[in-house]
Image 1: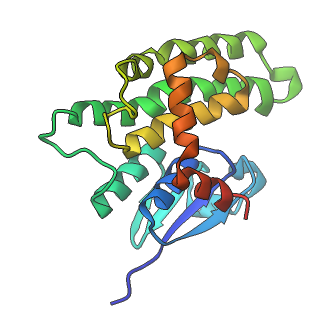
Image 2: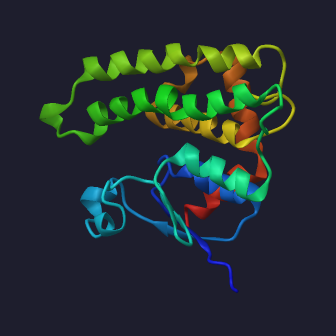
Length: 208
């Protein structure tokens, strides 16, 4: 029986970059569908596939997923790599960073994006954008402290999909112009993330 190929719908540097990077790190075969951003406005037919109109949208046979960090966890569990297992003392950190990546670190930045770029000029709000930018910077403290003990990755010596999930928030911060406000340990960490072959392959894939 032929195994179905994974398929990822993606917009350039959107949250779907998380699973794209994970696919490349894990060396899994996949089909990439590139869409203009935001797809719910620019590609209305996408709503037939994903009624939320959000990116990412991922399929693996009958599996359908829309949450970027969850897709990363699914891929790591499916291949048995880039993860921390229950019973490992680092497991709590691993799960916490996976969930913190979107709920705490990416969410405020989506409001910066909305109120500086996506809204019509008359509806943009620099005050709201500034408030949520400061929210994001304050919420990076947990990861900054974790890295302050000299560990290369968030869960220790091994790179995991939790790193992919959190590092995407730094990619977004760079695109929005406030990356320089995070702590020095996170900036060094971000350099290490960008140097990975999987990250470079993912960047190249979205330019196809």
